Length: 144
Image 1 (cartoon, one colour):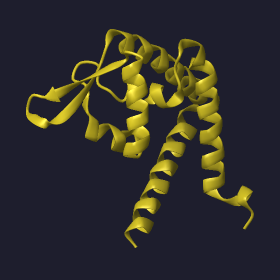
Image 2 (image 1 turned 60 degrees about the horizontal axis):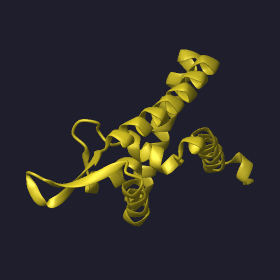
Image 3 (image 1 turned 180 degrees about the vertical axis):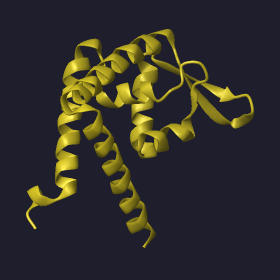
């Protein structure tokens, strides 16, 4: 089977294009796709446990650690001990982090709105159902 005829070829190619587009749109504000996605996955009020962020973003801990160090150096986040579990760390956004999060949020919302307007409600729903089916196949195949 030719790569162009496989689902994973198109999913990967599309994600690479999306990531490049996001990087181009936010680079002038000092953001990257990885930092923007991390900012969007940190609750503004509560923050997030560091152990929960990686799985939520689908990132390995070593990659996430690099992103978090960069974000901390830029003053976008700070880490605090979890009051309920002193062994755990909660990542919270700084004011600068919230500001950058708003930029990333706007870019993501604009992109998604453009897609929804282009393909319509019915095809949007079909796409989301198809992605759910792909995830279900992944879970099934990982279990075997």
